[in-house]
Amino acid sequence: MKEILIVEQLKKYFPIRRGFLNRKVAEIKAVDNVSFGIDRGETFGVVGESGSGKSTLAYVLQGIYKPTEGRIVYNGEEATHAIKSNPKLWSKNVQIVFQNPGSSLNPARNVYHILKVPFCAFKIARSGSELRQRIEQLLELVKLPADYIYKYPNALSGGEKQRVAIARALAVDPALMILDEPTSALDVSVQAKIISLLSSLQKDLRITYLFITHDLSLLRNVANRIGVMYLGKICELAPTSKLFSDPLHPYTKMLLSSIPVVSEAEEKAKPKKLPSKGEIPSAADVPSGCVFHPRCTEAMEICFGKEPESIHITDNHEVRCHRIN
Image 1: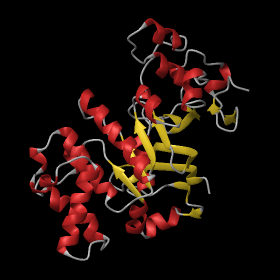
Image 2: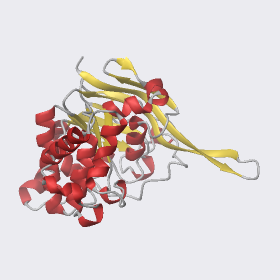
Image 3: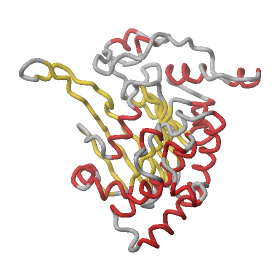
Image 4: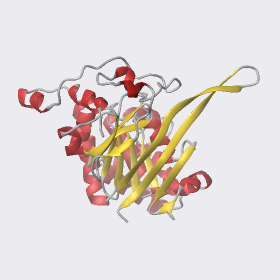
């Protein structure tokens, strides 16, 4: 089977409760009717502003949050209920690397004890010597010296912490890794090294990546396909080259035209400048019709009252916009 993961009409709503009786008065639509598939061995990117629902999507797919509705298929088998009933088994197949390595590592444990946890939880290593050998192999994979097993997180740089976090995710040999903005908390020079490491690991270990970021220019170099997310919905999905050369959704165009460039040639390659209008609304107060219409410079009357459906332009390119027909 080509697709390792299929997501169908996935929703994650958080209730807002108030009063003495704790009644639900509203709900936050963090992920709202999202569908996509990830091919085995590819890097699938998800991009959008803060508040678009990217991290919530990652946490649902990891099993941290339970989906409100929808279906998740892994390796051709229904996995929605398996994630709920057996999260430990699911985490062996799907691992996550968090945005801030400093907060995802226990400051009271050294690298040896941090990396020891997954091996012991899944009973992978049978003896102390085998455990140490496997941990040293992990450190070698992420380009860290073996003597780092004695170091604590506060003695590591940001890039080194993220390498330890990546090593921990690799310990159980997952087929799919969710990268939740893995470089956003790092210096620019360190970001490039982490991206290079992830690329080489994918090539050597044949891992599939779901790469979540707010940086569209970063995905241009690492992703095979990109889903543009806005207020809980995928508004455009296309191969990376197609998304950059022929963006269709006004929000995609706005993101692309906002990318900083350093040369006239790069400026000419960008789509027509679309001004960034307003800010993303709260997911607790989603606009009617097309959720992007309050910020859209191309909005029509239909956009205010009717939600657009996802339209397939080609097999690999789809967009959710009334202007496309």
